[in-house]
Image 1 (spheres, one colour):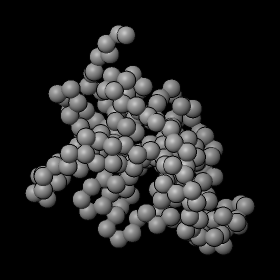
Image 2 (spheres, helix red, strand yellow):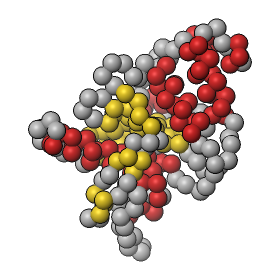
Image 3 (cartoon, rainbow, N blue to C red):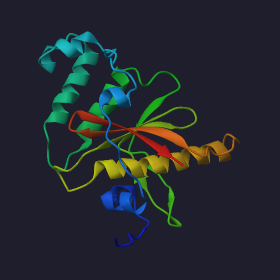
Image 4 (cartoon, helix red, strand yellow):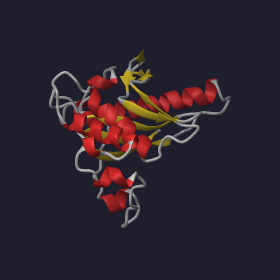
Length: 200
């Protein structure tokens, strides 16, 4: 087998080749195994979001905003990919992922050291708390260009792990973590695929 060369690349340039070069494997699991429960809880979301057929008929502003952005995210417009990111932010907020002490960010620039060079990995959406990046979201843009959202998400998780450890050491005065699981979601339109990435 040919030896794959590791090169310093920005997160947006990562493909399956980088995963192979760094010996990173992705293992599929069904929902019950992944979430460690056979019965997933019902989503804690405004019930009108689940029952309103047309966003124009939404009974309140929160449901309208979420459903309107869902509609925009399902209408693919070439060269405009922000609609899925906007929808992901509103959905995570509606599901209660942004309580006090946490914030949803878009296009957060992460700068990991790869192969001795600083590179950039820009998350589409991330959830941060007071100390670290908790969740990453990467949109699948294959309808615009042939990209690999899973490889890009993994590059972002590595960059987030680096950024989290940098915060621990330089700001909080804590030792770096030897490993950390970072949750991630790739979005194909409005359909999520959930990932956990153990970084070490």
